[in-house]
Image (cartoon, rainbow, N blue to C red; front, side):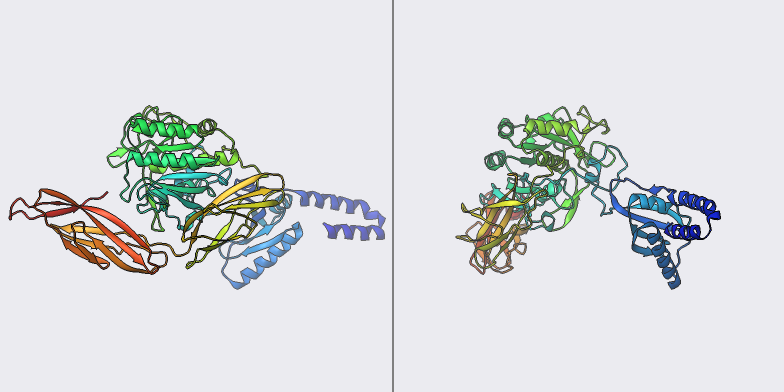
Length: 590
């Protein structure tokens, strides 16, 4: 158009008799240039603003000359319509991608050389179907997941088998609370269930709330079982230690228990929002605790076809005590061995809801538990589950759970600790504030001491694992808090062993024991009958004259720093009633 204008001015100066003709020509060309074409995919949810893919009216070719020709054409068209070429395509398709405004793209789409213009979009690895399902109202799935926020500044307590804290998917956001199985501060997972649950709550790939902080409270053993008194101790610990914005997840259950229901109800009253599993026995969830406890969100499981989940001989529990359904069949999440796996159960459905509660609390930290529960239920998708079996027909939906305060700061820090001495340094320079600046950094190092500054250092009095908390305050007085695990100095090994018995001969294998520094130097066995052994593997023959005797076998491993760890298992041996019936032993799997 600029060339025509310059030509028009030059001709007008030479001959006034053709001014009207030139004006008419300019008018016609102006209309053609202003014509607009359609942009495919305009306004899509994952659209990349100001970026477009252009298909030209010719077939692709692998010839070298085709690349040069398309490149020249792309440069010409981009220059003509005011864009900047990003990529040129000649073999898979004939076209290019370009950065320009929407108006420019519409004009480009009307050019005779262009077959179509499509809005560029974000692509990502396909989300697990569970995440994919809870951010849309209807099937089919669209292979994407978008949440209103990432759960920042919220703490989720996983009352379960523990968590594999070093799994890269957790990004250091999972820390140990307490282990009520071994009665120590190391709530590491030796089963996998708790890690899988934590992954659905908040891992970077498989999580609902991808920046939530998580705390492991171990109440189930390596076999996945525990007792009510241990679970109540876990609930007690969470209730005492939870900050203002806190969510609890219990993907566990048993027969109806007055004490467990009372403990959960009191924890809710203290301000902890709980998501609990309905159970997997295809029965009324009102017969199960903590599913029947008041004030919690009890979660049933659904499958990818929006049916109430069934698996093997069981299926999701049902009934009026179930508040809502969430995806619970073939749910992919992380495991304690650093890998991933797809598991079934209301245990897998429940953390979807715990993650949703974290989204609610991230948007409104002052909301009450009752209001948070109500918001989750009020935004569910209704009447989608087939065969609800007298259960409220609600399916979790997270897209309307509110956005995080856009002006709130975000706390973030990295830790670096020595592997030989209890010295650690911390760096909070990754903390941000969207509308101002961070004015202060307050640290709690987990050993009763505190500090300030962006990059403090701290020497602990002894080796160990500590939960470090950072609170940042911005120039408007808004705060944000996050916690991370600091592993100071050499860490103790973790003893683990398997045992197999053939009649009275039992073979013990301690090769599953681990040490963070990779240097276990000794294995000491106590077979529980006064006999001992050494080495990674050991064999022992039991004998008993009694009808049935249970022996407690122990393995103690020691590392190069003389740090020890002990684990035990029970071996039940049935005595020989006569020489024709030899003694035989069975390892107990709990």
